[in-house]
Image (tube, rainbow, N blue to C red):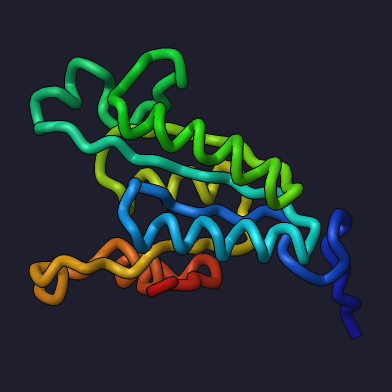
Length: 152
């Protein structure tokens, strides 16, 4: 019989939790929920912001490439970085911040695979059009690679 090896860092819970943040109300709630989970599980939090640009702008910055924090992609990413630092201190968790550019689902999946995350947390979409094409949350759940928690 094969034995199950618990997570070396945290016991049997997640070791790395990715939370997608875009500045929306639901993503802020998702970040708070993920931070609480990370604190309880003694897990590391990976916060990912995906900047979306017009199609041709992606060619300038390297579509899907990691963007350094000092690149100054936009004010939203800077504001989020400040909020993450403050929240990480308040929740007493280790948090990393990654800024990417491109399709949110593709970039979140890449970041999750690269960091070998154990769970993904996203906020629920409030856009009506996502019922037709699928929201980020639905597309991540359909990928079926990690447990995905969708926070309303």
